[in-house]
Image (cartoon, rainbow, N blue to C red; front, side, top):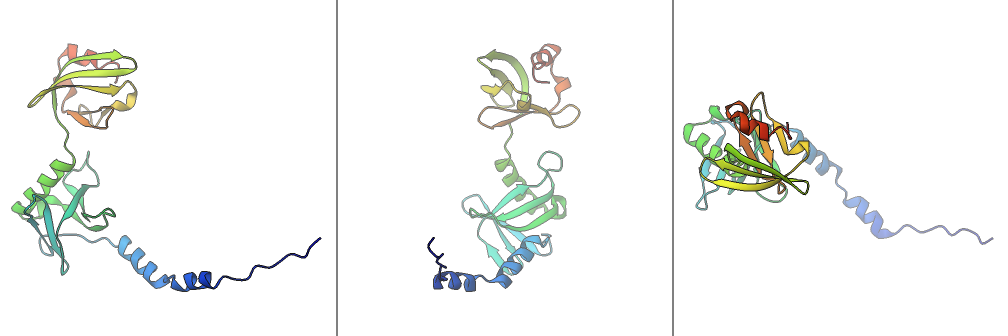
Length: 195
């Protein structure tokens, strides 16, 4: 049996370990965990030429920011996350209550929310046909009519409250029925497969 050879340490591995900056990692972790509230006193939003929103906060200017709802279905105007617009989308801070901002600032943020969380409202359900495991919805909406396919599973239609429904099609597009009980009896009967 040949004696076992012991591998020598690679000098590059030692350099990689030396480059590991524990203090920088700790600082980055602390920044991620810190809750920064954006208020009318410390943050200023402005429209950009391209229809986006910029932000001045804490001595820094962000040419474009992303607006994300932390509770999009239950609290659409509270705890709004403002993030950098790059692919990492690092959080800059939270707006605790949208109504705490100036009126013009509120409107800018609401516009961005509507763009990101667009959900057409279904006013009538004309028909729902089951074909090959998919439900084809023929609906009227506030401004148009549409036919879209949705899965026949229970996940495609969910209650968001006592009477509000959200319908998700096979592409992940969401539609809202604001009041299930305002639909006619015939329309509600068509939805029996899902509820």
